[in-house]
Image (tube, rainbow, N blue to C red):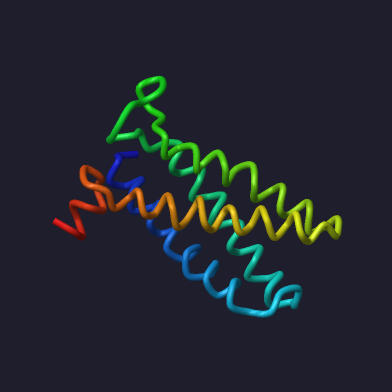
Length: 128
């Protein structure tokens, strides 16, 4: 799969996750709707993180000629989403909340912000 195809696939999962995550933050917690859209959000975020692992870093230093610093957010998501799910299932709501806030802030907002930096594809598409 080409880098451009991966980028479109990535955008197709991260944009709904961005919107769903925002809705989750604004709505009441613990309701059946929160649980349903939360699971959808988790699936989108896991798929997004997996997709990014196949996208090589195009800006900055790399490890193994592929991974860059931005991939740390992918690993954050791959750890934090299952940890948050397990925490919620076990009634550890504070742990669940901390993990999910970290996923949204780190995996969506901060990583998303980096995606608009000069030299990155989204910067070229939208800001140049």
